[in-house]
Length: 163
Image (tube, rainbow, N blue to C red; front, top):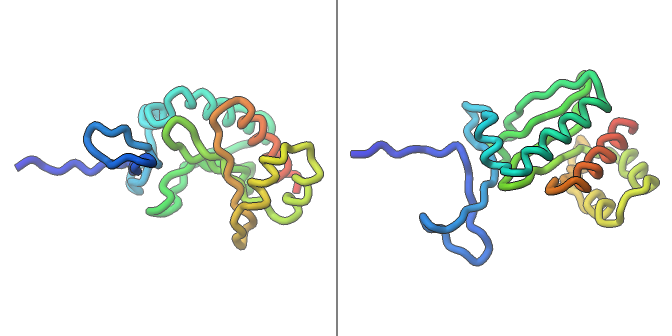
């Protein structure tokens, strides 16, 4: 009898499709708590967006030195994210997905007000305003799929760290 292989990945049906062996599946993250994502697995999940991943890490490291990075497991429903911190303060979390990643921030109300005073696009302000509220602040999540998204994430990081 063949041994069943358990994947460290979670997949979801794409809209309008049923999952079959031939269907393309949307990667939704790394969910094996016992194993942090390896560089090779990360590159496979992100595809060409791996360059954006490295660009954002470099820009944040340059702007907020000293910077520490650590993989954190957010639970069985969220999986692994890379946390970027300056000293003990979290700047942002990066969650890998299929071909892109999320840059997530916890924005307090002071940072929300500062974002509205900054030169941010209306679409980004809507993401901030619509973000769910938690004790640690609003969970602002930005999809990073291109260079403009990197610029937005760096601006949001600067606003968060200044407030």
